[in-house]
Image 1 (cartoon, rainbow, N blue to C red):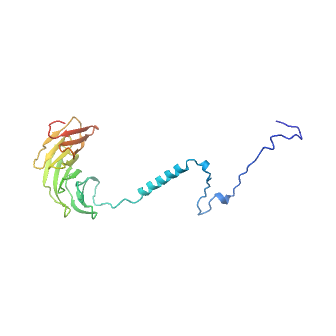
Image 2 (image 1 turned 180 degrees about the vertical axis):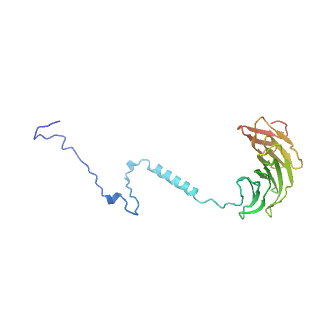
Image 3 (image 1 turned 135 degrees about the vertical axis):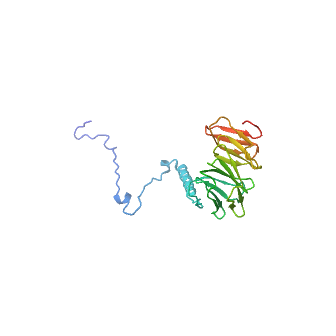
Length: 245
């Protein structure tokens, strides 16, 4: 809008101009200095300050626990990848590990050392290991379609170089698990087989139409119940007192 010369606009007196001026030394860090940040402490501009500070403190605590160096020691010795490991179901017992080259090792967790090595326990992979209910027996299964029972001396932390018994399976066993109170163990492969120490053939053999069984475990509360999982993502429950799942 044009106004005559000498006429004064009524809006010109209400105009205000604000100028922000900063020197470069105030907000630019020099060589070797930390970058400077400016923050307005006005509480009205930060209504979620308490929640943000709580979240930051929580994340800082979690990060501190993550990097608190919980790592104790690396148990080195296996020349190939470790496939499985197991401990007895009571404190103070050693750790048993099996590798892909068929080797078994016994580790003393109090001294964090390897006390015993069985170099050729199986031909091929050691698929799984488990320790007996009393801690004096070790059972291992491998690619050679056998399950072997080893004598374990807890006092000297040694495994006998030769197995006490060898059980021949009809297929490669993926897992082996020991019963909680009896001298029985279960293996999984094409079927779920329940074995006794004193027999060379399974007491019971179960299948429910799946291609292959991945794992199985005895139930500690129900001594005759076995749970198993298969490659088709199915779950089977077996009572080895019966003939069918």
